[in-house]
Amino acid sequence: MDLFKDRKVQFALDLICTVPTSGTGNAYPSPRTIAGADYQHTDLKDHFELLKDIHTLTLSHVRAFSGWFMGGENSTLITSADMQVKAIDPNKAGNIGLVNQHKICLRRFSGTLHFILKNHVTRSSYNSFLPSIKICLYQDEVTGRQVICGLILLKMAMEVMKPQLVINHPSETRFSLL
Image (cartoon, rainbow, N blue to C red; front, side):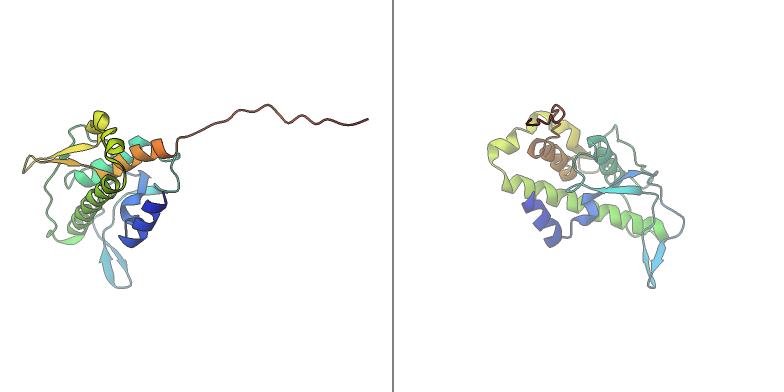
């Protein structure tokens, strides 16, 4: 966990590690303007941090966010059934172009997460995820290449590293000496 926290700061991975859990993912007609600069503006709400809110954030939330940034210009915040990386145009005018640029950035960060994980765990640990790799495997519709979503893979790894553990214990019994 410390490795990913350090890398998050070093590589500015907070954009991809902050996962929205509600909203549609649709782009608004106009961008947000902050201090005179235009930024992408989408309907993504209720963000949770992957490295802090490990058990609050579900795998379906992470897969839905991944489907949003891997999908096309009209993709929404739902789990993508086709698992396709869609081509998008980052040079479009207005907010759509800014949103597309943001999605491309998130795709790169996803690859970065994948290779940070792959390079810092043992080969046998990495290979243990291969039987369930289908849930984080996308196919590029243009090139036909298969792309592993590092965000989904990291969430799967975190469920192994930090399992949700619930301990039931009997209520505290107090003894008194007479």
